[in-house]
Image (cartoon, rainbow, N blue to C red; front, top):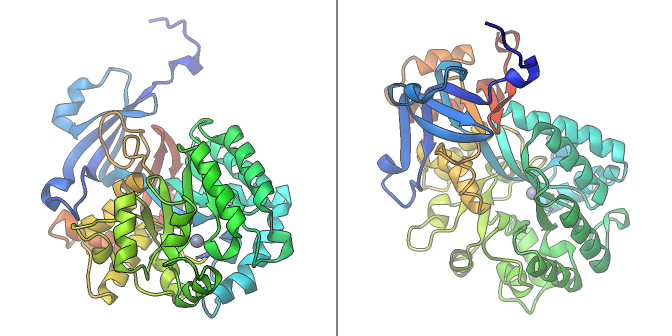
Length: 451
Ligand code: GUN
Ligand code: ZN
C-alpha cells in the first residue's frame, strides 16, 4: 500500500504506556487512603497531544486505542505522575554538599559566593543545562525554582526548560540587604526586572513565573512592599520564599521586624501570603501561624534532606496536615541545601524525619506530597499531579528492580504500599526507568547505565 505522507508527519500523536499504575486521586491525610490512592496492577495510560486521555486496566483501555497508537511496554514497572519539586535553587547545583555550621553560616560561606557567578550568562546557561537534565533523570517534571538575583539567570533557565518542554515555575531572587553588594538589587529594580520577566515568560509555552523574595531577612520593607504590589498586579503568578527554617534565622527576623507578631506576619503584612504562595520549610511555625496558613491557602514546601543537612530541625508533617486545619504541603529537594535531586530519595527522608518527629507518615502520604500535594500547593491540580483524563501527560516510570538489592528486596514485598516503602528507601535516579514530558519520552535509562 502506498502512503503519500512524508515520514515526519506519520509520527503517531498518541502513545500508550503499559505498567502498574500508582497515583493519588485525593488527599490521603484527609480522606480514606484506600480511596485516595489508586493502584492498577496491569494498566494503560493513553496520551494524546500532550495530555492524558484515558487510564485504567489494560482490558478496558486497549479497545480504545487507534491502530497507529504505539504502546510502550513497561510491564513490571510502576507508572506514576511525574514528580513535583516545590522548592529548589538551580543556581546552587554547584554547592551541594558544602558543610556549613547552620543555615546562616552556609549562606554566607558558600551560597552567596556561588550565586555571584550567575552574573555571567554562560555560567547560567551551562548550569541550567545540567539542572534540567538532572530533573529529567530523576523523574521530576515540574519544579518551583529559585534563580539568582540576576534577571539573566531566569532567561537561561526558561530557555533551557523550553528545549525540554518542561513545566518550570521560576523567578529572579529579590534581595536588597544583608547580602554581598554584588547580590543586591533595589526595591525599584527588583520590581521593574520581575515585571519585565513576567511579561517575557509567564505563560510562554509551559513556563510560569514566581515572584521570589529570598526571605524576609534579605529584603527591606520597601522591597517587600514592591513584591506585594507586583503580586496584586499579577495575581496569577506564584509567590515563593523561605520561612521558619532555623531558630537563629527566626531570631534574626524577630530582631529585624520587631513590630510584627511572628515570622508569617511579616509576609502577611506585605500581602505576600495566600493561594498560589509556597514557603519553603516552615519547620518552627507555631499553631497560630499554621492556622493562618490554612485559612489563607498558603502552602509549605517540606525539604527533609536540607533540614537534616543544615541541622535546621524536624518538620512535623502530621501536625502541619492536621485535618482540623490542614496546611497544603509539597515536597522539595532544596538543592543545594538539600542533598539529592531525587524525590524518591526525598520521600524516604521525609519518612525518616517524620519518625524522628514522632509522627511517621505512610508511603502513600509520601507519594501524595511528591505529586498531587505539590500540584495543589502550586494551584495546578487541574493540570498536574494525578493520572486522570485531561491532565498533562507528565509521567515517571519506576523500576522496582533497578539495582540488585532493589530486585532482591522487591521480590519479597507483599503489597503495593510495601513496594513503595522499599522504593523510597533504596531508590533514587537509578530507579527512574523513563520520564515522559507532555506525552513525549524525555529520558530513558539505558541498559548499560542500569548494569
Ligand atoms: N533562606 C534564605 N536563603 C536560603 C537559601 O538559599 N537556602 C535555604 N535553605 N534557606 C534560605
Ligand atoms: Zn531554599
